[in-house]
Length: 78
Image 1 (cartoon, rainbow, N blue to C red):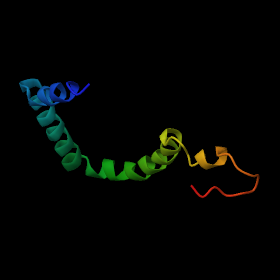
Image 2 (image 1 turned 180 degrees about the horizontal axis):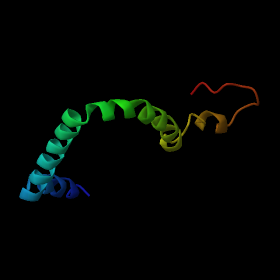
Image 3 (image 1 turned 135 degrees about the vertical axis):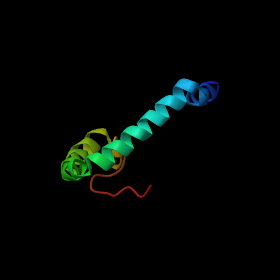
Image 4 (image 1 turned 90 degrees about the horizontal axis):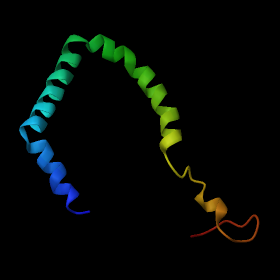
């Protein structure tokens, strides 16, 4: 499994990987310079969208302590 990491790094250092990084940087620059007002208008909606997505994909939601063995009503100190 340690062999996957060098292949992933080599992919981004290939000519196609370098092109993808540069094209993404140019696209982000164009988006921010030409459409800054549109991006700024979308920020509140992106924050509102991030809240339920974080709740869905967060994982444990802090419920792991409720399933620990112990007396009812006793807090777990682990």
